Image (cartoon, rainbow, N blue to C red; front, top):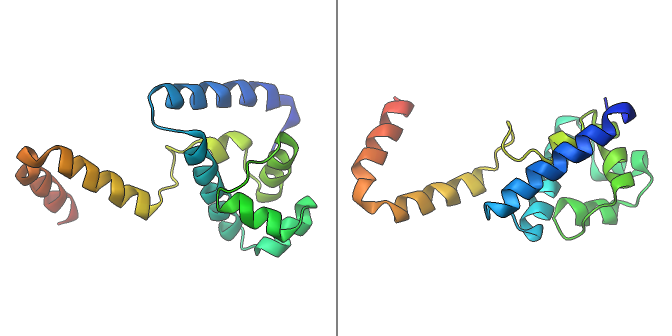
Length: 134
């Protein structure tokens, strides 16, 4: 559950995470919006809520929630707090893109990029993956 007492510390920690990732070139604002939207959708589905149900819980219309989940709209701090509370997660967890949430499409893209950048090591990469899967 979101705890308002820790919100300042979480906000500072969130800013540090985002700043570090932006400096590393991992995230752009477009990527942040899309990843955040995917995380919200992931936790909404995990909570077995439709967009309409979550939108009603947080007092926004379902069209706005749809735009947020697709990464077309960035959300206010108030809306973020409401979403986190409704989904029973912290705002930090929604922005922690390195935790248990993994989008298979993004993972495949990253894997193909690694392979393309390291073609000289493709046999080693194959052996590692094969060993892991067997």
